[in-house]
Length: 112
Length: 109
View 1 (cartoon, rainbow over the protein chains, first blue to last red):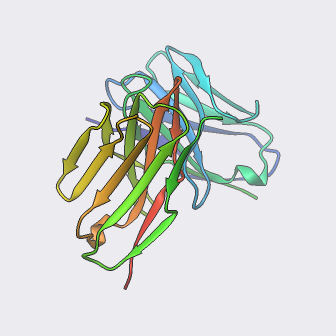
View 2 (cartoon, chains in turn brown, blue):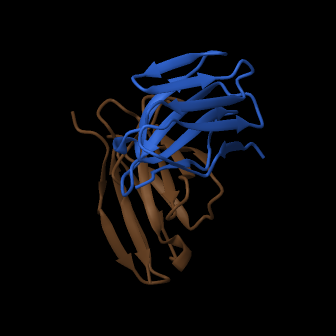
């Protein structure tokens, strides 16, 4: 039973560029949440997707957008990258919105 | 806004000593979840508490949820090197999962 898978594992981008990160949820999970975790900090909630809709959003600018596909996989897009966007981006899936989260290994994004 | 305060930020212990981290919420929580993140890893779900006053044990780990459902604690007895990592609480309130800042458990050499 595959857990949450994320790709790519590492990414280096230049300021101003755009990036797309991908996530496949754990089998049987239909809810996907995205988090940003800066070094030494706790996870910061970006948004949650359910039934292909953004159900909830954290305090992140519109440069951060996402999508959920009919097979429940999800993408996180970040436009106009800033140096401060350098972080570990974690995808988590769950059975329901308030159920325990199962995290993927994350994508380490470095913006130079 | 809604907050979950988690203390301490760091705890240095000798191997074999106990470790405790505390979480306090500004609002009543419908449940509280605990996660462990090893260095270089991702958060891993440990347990969820739902009922007022609930106490759950996992081997050397004891989790408590306060009577008012506003606070929680994690206590580790006789720490081992495998316990090293950062422990996060996350409470569900008003359709939001609110994370504490984490407590980093460091074993003194």
